[in-house]
Length: 189
Ligand code: A4P
Ligand code: MG
Image 1: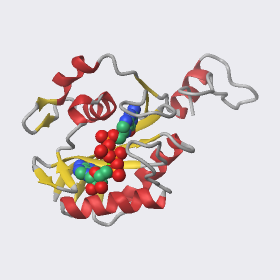
Image 2: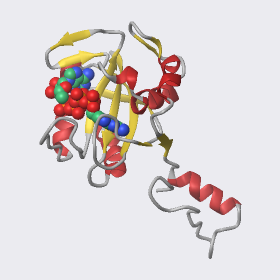
Image 3: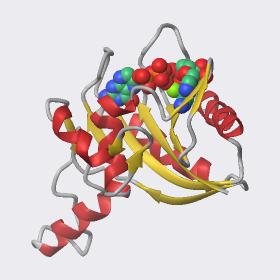
């Protein structure tokens, strides 16, 4: 069994919902145990156009090899309608292997650790949320890389239950039904 970390991203269609559904899909795989998932973050596109992205990370334990895990990630992307009209095109779902244990893989169609993760807040911030002490082979602590990426916009999306809790606590509930305090892009969903 190997502990691996996946990075999920989407900025086409109902991107936030796609991330949540993809985590469920991963958890349903016999060869995978989901150990942790980060919050969902709304992020500015990096080296890409289109709408803001939603990103998150998942920590899992798996009996799959790195190559089998890549094939599964690609099947899930396909299931969610992923198309690749051009490089870094907007996407309904992207599932990348960020880390696979402390293995290093350098093959034409599989590079682990993911070669661009160390320069991207949308990959590192969710990872550090899951494991504050996470180390990346040949790069050291993931958290130590974050200050250099402070110019990349990334904001945590408040979970619905948190909104319900704060609305109820402050007396916004109507007829016994709690009403989310904020609704809209990047707010409670
Ligand atoms: N591949 C090689 N290594 C891996 C790996 N560790 N995990 C190969 C997954 N795939 C890997 O992938 C292209 C090829 O990478 C595949 O054939 C696979 O064999 P893809 O899923 O078709 O495209 P991709 O993920 O867009 O490619 P790439 O080059 O990994 O893109 P990046 O660098 O991940 O950038 N901005 C924000 N805010 N949020 C984002 O999620 N994503 C990108 C994509 C750009 N900007 C973004 C975001
Ligand atoms: Mg990908």
